[in-house]
Image 1 (cartoon, one colour):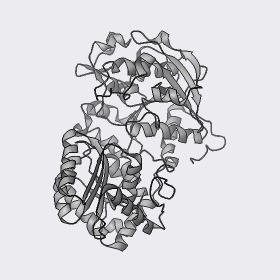
Image 2: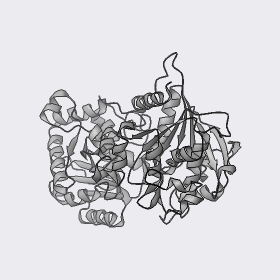
Image 3: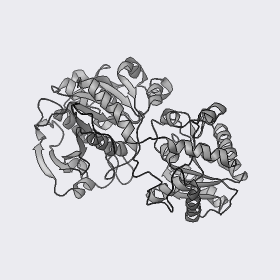
Length: 494
């Protein structure tokens, strides 16, 4: 539980705008943050309302929601919408943007069931952005007025542009980048449909190399820009990681900061986790062996006391470095290692894992798709967790692994560099070593780092030190929330 605000400190009013929220609609880390950060703010006594589209899962979950406003008059070429409200047990109020023509569809929030982007995403998330801006302006149909509008990723990042061009703001705006690779690019012609003036389509406006970019708009007009780790905040100002927006980010570096995400200490806690075979904590790490045996059984791995289990739960994509693991797998298997892999993604990588499992029955266990209970078992039952991302804004699995006493091997980038401390002489001496890192995004570099991890695993006293170091560190939202509160207070003068 996050701490309450200090006595005499005024509470804040925050409107959190998001395209997804766990557990109802989630495709990645944004869904987790949209659930956990508002809850942590509310636990401190702040007034938080989360604006999210009225997807079928949310409408089904809250049949008793209350309709509170119509916002059809803002629409322009966009469809009209209603706003409904529901109060959650954690103190957060959900504001559901109900527009059946845009949001009540079979499929995901961004794509249909075949994996194709919805062709009207520009209007679907244009409406979400403009609704967020409306509620943060003098024209809001609600009596409640936020002091801060917190937008997340491209799907809501057009809101600060609406506040700049079309509305009178009553709230400061924050735009958080969860992944700069997704910039919300659409044709120039969409400007008219979105009710943006022609003069907005300029380099100092929403134009990005001949396209409209929702994210560029937010980075241009947001009062503050944050991203989800300090290292990623530095990396996105570099050409190699900037996706064409690094120049703008360098220009606005004085309002850019990185705040590391937190994790849910209730859902991800080996001492209380109901999805693993046996609970354990920092002082009962021997019980982890029961989970290793259970993981092996689920994935058909041989019971071999001399074999370390290397776990991975990941999207099978180039970004996540899945190809690096595949390239390094054969040498590791020759050394006696086993693999426990869960994920899905690019078809070529999925097939490569299937073939590897066929060639090495009993040593490679692979499940294509996603299984929540198996994800927890991989964290609890593996000896080492692999996360060799080419870039990683924050990452959550490495923090889960640390909490579960499963030292991770990661590429030192983004939030991975901010959370995993490589085992060296000095870091062992000062008690900070909790995993293994490498810098070059190559299979040989990964292989060398994993071999170091296996060598350390074979040294039982050393391995227990590394495990305990990781489990002792607190990555929960009780700590992660405070930099956001400080940021909001700076913006509002509260």
